[in-house]
Amino acid sequence: MFVAVRRTAAPLIALAIVGLPAAAGAQTVLTSTVSEPQVAQESRDEDGSPSHSIGVPDRGRLRDSVQLEPTPHLFIRESRRAAQHGTAELVGLIQRAAARVSLAHPGPRLVVGDLSRERGGRLHPHRSHRSGRDADLGFYLLDEDGEPAEPDRFVNLRRNGCGRIGETRYCFDPARNWDLLAALVSDPTTVVQYILVAPDIRRRALEEGERRSVDPALLERVRVATEPHRGSRSHRSHFHVRIYCPVDDRPECVDEPPYHDWYVGDPAPPTPGIRRMRARQRRAYRRQAARQRARAARRARQRRARARQRRERIRARREARRGSD
Ligand SMILES: [Zn+2]
Image 1 (cartoon, rainbow, N blue to C red):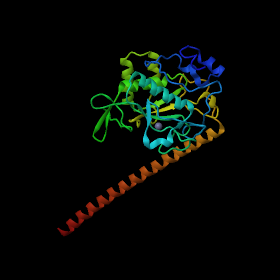
Image 2 (cartoon, helix red, strand yellow):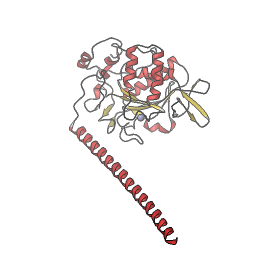
Image 3 (tube, rainbow, N blue to C red):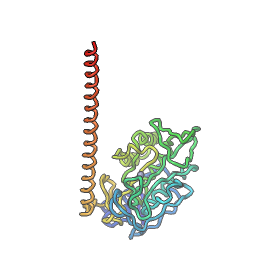
Image 4 (cartoon, rainbow, N blue to C red):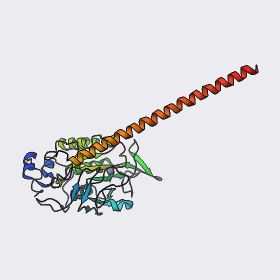
């Protein structure tokens, strides 16, 4: 039923009341620059998908997850095959977005990093990625001749938009990365919450959207979804994509701010368990901050002590010289 409502401008509230799965309505006013792919959309009905995201992404779990498999449009970083599980919504989102980019630009595929483990939970080295709602998607890159390239891993980009693996230089591809962002935020079934990416790299993608004079609503959605957040700055090799809780996974699945105006339904009040968890997190942050302050104070004391010793040594030398005169 999700296909039927695509690009109708039904008010969100009505959609929330009829309980549309995965909030299809939120996306319907957007027209993407990329044309409709002939991808098999994963089947959904009013009962929603079988997968369940539980809790918050920093401390959650995943039940009946779906594994992302390689397709003609995407491949998986070899070392991270165990971390390719997500909700059906997240996995479908990645497959559809990669297919849409491929349709406009056949050739090199999207490189996918970590999602979550089969049952979620802690996934080293990430803080989140625990509940099947986070995915790391490598940037689309160009080679030295400006041709689309497909390095087998993420490439860290410097301020000039380029980076290296060994001797080979790669640069950010504004065209395909813009199309990827556009496809992610205008997906017909899955609702993206935000995309973490370093601000200077984000600017390159947004400039491409502006240059193409895309639908202003789409440009605005990409702009808001990629607004800098805690953690954006370090994302210089990939986009970190976070989706909102699928409607049918709530209230076990818990969203956290920001609640953008495309959020469907009302944010559930946090359960006592979540409130306890947040209180624990706040205490942990406070303890960490106190430890950092203590360390800084210790270092300052040590610096002062060393300076005092230096002064004393100099004085002692002077007195020794004076004594020998
Ligand atoms: Zn990530």
